[in-house]
Length: 240
Image (cartoon, rainbow, N blue to C red; front, side, top):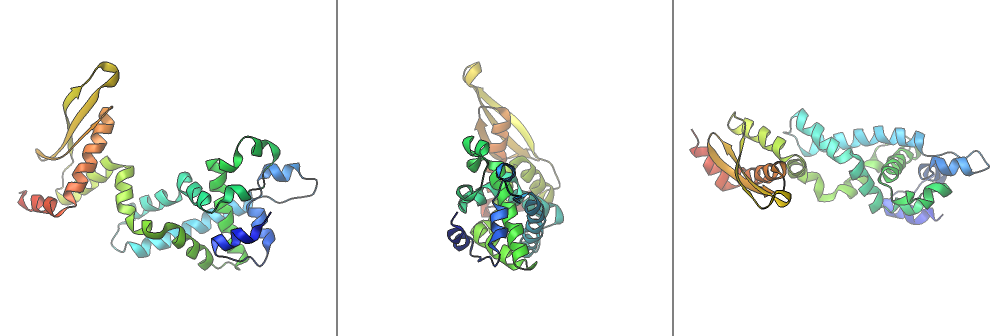
């Protein structure tokens, strides 16, 4: 396995390459080898904790006015399995994983859970190799996150638009949004629902979808976009 290219990709040169090897060794590979081979589970445990600290610090500094609850949601967004697996893909970890024959034959190198686990193990290995210094992990996470670190508020809204709108309307008006279905079109198997979202009997957004829930989410996104524009702010000022 060529570890040099991977080290160049992550921007960190290991003083002990065996740490990197262990981080990318699946338990199935270790079980099939004749010698006592270490695998990534312990490093994954450590890397998970390291990741939580680094991400918490980055969010805390990037959003000085964000309340605890919002920062917790941001951290969950950045540390969920699908996000970490995407980081793993961007580093091409799948092609560097040492897998047992069964795991390899069933597409283990592309499996989301394995990419997530190996990414956390990689962070744990970097932390250990750097003598418990968080800076290499911090630099890697900043590189992977890029501009998206400053776009977490909109990502939260997209992930849970109805929840985001409710928090926004509580802050602006002290009231909950109300969703009203204003139309249902099409045959039973292809219905399209149209929903409006109202705040204090005023329409702030409208959306459509094949399910009422989807239509409500689209309406919530439209309302959030409206409220965050200058036009929306003018609307707020006119509301008694």
